[in-house]
Structures are given as structure tokens and as C-alpha cells.
Length: 314
Ligand code: PSU
Ligand code: MN
Image (tube, rainbow, N blue to C red; front, side, top):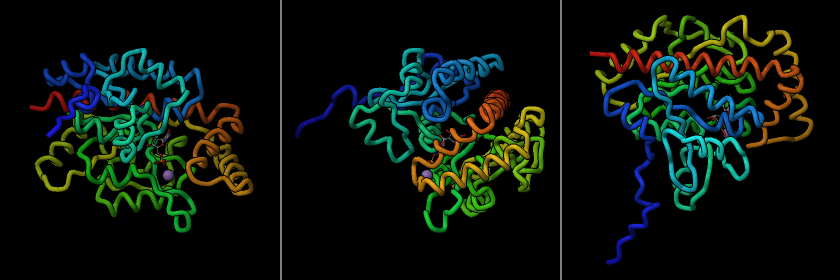
């Protein structure tokens, strides 16, 4: 019987950076960061600067960053600068959801990980806190297109805490919240009883539970473990600061224009999100990008504080 021991196929999944491994060994706080937002969600070359800045924000809060991506068929938690540059460079960098990980590893592909792939790899590495911008969700027109991000189903079966600013208003927000309820994913509003609207502090939808401090989030995480059973995630919905949100009137107007243009041009499937996001950036003169970045920075800072509270538990 032959044995297959090619080293690239026996690397641990994910490979941890030195810094991340040491922090985990010492029970120090670590925050997982997503890479799709860098490779496919932000314009180049600013994306690389943002990637480095987010890692620095985590460190400034006393935690260790673990940016997650697949480079040359190897999954990493904690990227060195060269690998972060590969991911931010864009050329040949695929978008990898959870289901894409196996073929990416098997074929030596390079790709940025979405929330579903990042949450999966982070949990596998023993990380408990993950900060991102917005989750994928249920798309408008979903009754016809059946377009619903794999993020939701993956979070229903993965024990991780995800800090996000809600879901983008280009999605069907009430339907996304309903699906999270059906799937049994717990949602906490951070300092708010409203579900945030990514670019906006308030999507117009309520949330059932409100917390105000990182220690309260850590207490809910501990209670999840105490309950046991289904390995669902915990969503911490953290609104962008009101003074940094996109002007709601401008938001509603350009969103309606973007959706109409998308329909007219017959854009569908994978192309919808990049088209709408690009349209919003142009139509708001870059203001949507600034609100987007403000939301992500706030989530990363809060993620680090939650990771600290979690690491400090008795
Ligand atoms: N929200 C953002 N920017 C992004 C994404 C979401 O503000 O780049 C990315 C995330 O990686 C998310 C993914 O997991 O889009 C969802 O993609 P899809 O709908 O194809 O599952
Ligand atoms: Mn989709």
C-alpha cells in the first residue's frame, strides 16, 4: 500500500504564525481577521495599507492578529508581510468560501477567505474571536435567485464569536436576520438595540439582546460553552459610530440608483456585490468607503477587547 506524504499535503490546517502559536500556548488574546475584504472588498493599493493597519489596531489593544488566507495551497492563520502582499496584490487571488478550501489546498491555489472560510479555519486553529466588516447574507430577490451566502449556514455550526457591523444594505436585511434566527445563531447588539446597517448605525431592524462591555460578551461565550450542544456562532453586531456613518439620505438615494442600474444591465450572481459596492463608492465620492473602513476599524478594536476579556476569564 502506498503512502502519500508530500509535505505540502501534510502541513497543519491552518499553519499558525509563530506569534499566533505562542499566544495560543500562553492563552493570550488572538483575533482572527478575514482576507476577502482586503482582496475583493477594497480598492488597491489602499487594501494593503488597511490590512497592515487592522493588524496594528489589534496589537495596540493588546491582542495578536491572525489574518487568514490560503497561499500556494497552504492555509495560514497569521500572514507574514510577503503573504499579505500576495493577497492584497489581487493577481490570481481567488475568493474562497468554506466549500472552496479543499480544492484550493489540493490544487495549490492562492485565495482570500470569506467569513465562512475564515470562521472555519479560525475555529479549527482554536481561535474564538473573529472581526470583520459585514457578513454575507440573504440577497434581495432571493425568492427567485436563491442567493444566500454560505456564511450563514457555516456560522450555524461553528463555535466562534464574530464581530461585524451588520450586513450590507445591498442585501435583504430582514430576511437575513430571519435566517439567522431559523439557523439558531445568537445575535447581540453592542451598545444598541438596533441591528446595524453596515454603512449606517441602524438598519431599521431591532435586535433582541444588548450588551455594553466586552466582559458581557465573554460571559455569553462562556454560557454557550456551558450549554453545549449545537456548535453555533455568536454574532456581535457593532454599529459604526454615528458621526462616521454615511449620510442616510445619500445612502438611500445611491442604493436605489445602484440597484436599478444592476437590474438594467442584467448583472447577476458573483458579480452583483462588487458591482454594487463599486457603484456606491463612485456615487458617494468615496464616502461609502470611509464609512466602510470606520466600521471595520471599530469591529477590529472591539474584537481585540473581547479576545482580552475571553482570555482573562478564570
Ligand atoms: N461584506 C463586506 N465586504 C466583503 C464581504 C462582505 O463588507 O468583502 C465578503 C465577506 O468575505 C463575506 C463575503 O464573507 O463577502 C460573502 O460573499 P458571498 O455572498 O459570495 O458568500
Ligand atoms: Mn452569494
